[in-house]
Length: 248
Image (tube, rainbow, N blue to C red; front, top):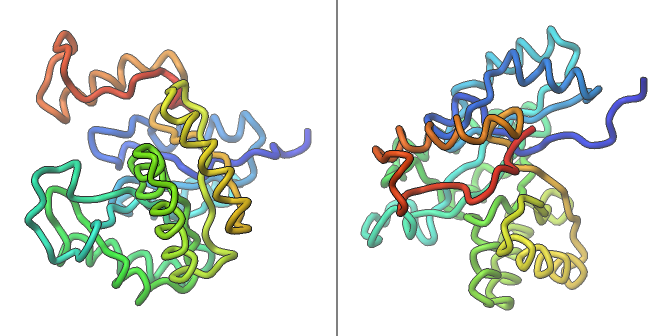
C-alpha cells in the first residue's frame, strides 16, 4: 500500500502537559495504520518527549520530525508585565529540519524556561533570529500571532508579522498554517491566510492541531483541560476547545 500523502506536522503528545492526550506508542501505531512514513511532535513549549518519540518512531519505521509549539512573547521575552496569560504570548510551531535545527530548538526551549518564563516558557523574535538556522516555522493555531491579528481584522499587521518571520527564518522556511477544525473563526482566518500567501508568495501547509487520537476521545480531553485549569465539566465559563475536531 502506498504511503499517505498527508503527514501530521502539528501534534501534541502527553508531554503537552494536561493539554495533549496522545500517548506515543498508540500515536505511532495509528500513524502506521494510516501508512504515514513520517510524523512530527510539537508539544507546547517543551521537548520533553523528543527522545522517547524519536526512538519509538525509529523502531516503528516512521521518520520522526522533532519540533515544538513554542510560546513567543509579543515584545521582549524579558518583559513580564502583561495583564494576563492570554496577552503574555503567542504560539509558533518550529520544526527541526537537520541537526543544527535540533540543537537550536533545544537552545530556544531552554531560553524560554530560563529567561522568558512568564505564565509559560517564552522566547521572542530577537532570540529566534539568533538561533534560527535549521528551523522551519509554521504560523500555528488561532493563538498564533498572524491568526490572532487576522481575527481582529488587522490584515496589514498580519502581513508585517509574517514578513518578520520570513526575514528571521528565510522565505523557504516559513509557512502559513491552514486548519479545519469546525470553528467558524478558523474559516475566516483561513481566507485571510490564503490571501496573505498569494501576496507574499509563501507556502501554505495543512495541519490538524492534534490533541487526542480519535474523535470519541474529545470528552476525555475536555476533562484533562478541567484538571489543568482547576475547573469542572459543568462550569459554563471555562477553557474548552469548542469542537471535537482536534483528533488524529
